[in-house]
Image 1 (cartoon, rainbow, N blue to C red):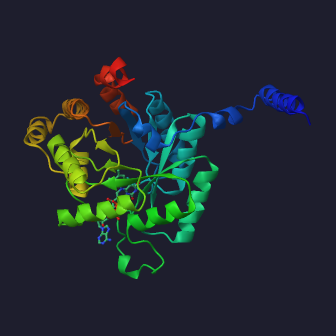
Image 2: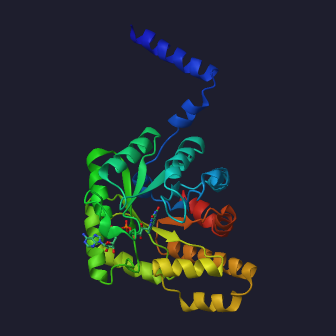
Image 3: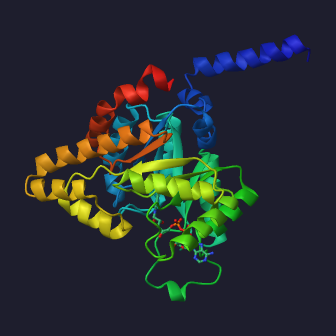
Length: 325
Ligand code: FAD
């Protein structure tokens, strides 16, 4: 076939596709981003975390929250894996929805502590087939029967990252802990293990929630001192009720600032006032972070679009303005 014939043939196929109104074709060919490339640009990135439902029957509610969140035009949305009570089986489905129906870059979380390499290969194969290019590779929380785990299971996130890098072309993120990981009392070791994890192939890091920005600045300085040079995205948890504050601080070990404690004392028994104060606190944190050069803001949305919307409204010119183009 001549070059013209070839081009003409290709053109006909495209026209046929248009005539068939094959929407999924166009959804799939939209530009998909590596988060690494996004973070290498000059502007501040905005992203959201969502989690899968506890029960399969609740999936529609989660998908509609995810859709509403996408209207804020985040740079990417991450989906947890078996965290926050969500089941791991829906992670790939929600990531697929984000990537291919909403046309937002998806970041699928993947934990390894309860998995064998074969389990991981099955999940990454599914993600790859759905066109999901970004994975947040995690160890996951230790199961209570850890001592009975078969030897083929992973022990640390670094091992998972090494395996993922060997066999796939994913852009890989990892978790980091500005106040140190709760299981590791030795902060120096914690940073050394983080370095090992980054050297295994992490393209970027997302932080655990924190309430004191100075803790993050100090952490970033320690990363610099230890030659850990990948981009760090700040995880912001807008805590809007007293029960979740107690749960989050217990799980993460994040310290409350005196300002935060005063806010809790004053509004503990006024849920609406506390919610408003929690959002204002998160907005203030985000403004301070961006003012001090932090380039990535990741909001733990708890699947509540209205909270993310309030925060974005408070920083709209800061994140969407001319200076961030
Ligand atoms: P690792 O990096 O493996 O570190 C775990 C612990 O082991 C640390 O104390 C570290 O210092 C230590 N360590 C590492 N390497 C070594 C070594 N070679 N020798 C000795 N000690 C070592 N959990 C979920 O279940 N699902 C999720 O979707 C999820 N998403 C998350 C997203 C973010 C941004 C964050 C910050 C956490 C998330 N988590 C999630 C929680 C996470 O799984 C837990 O915090 C878990 O306990 C640690 O995971 P990791 O990947 O950081 O582990």
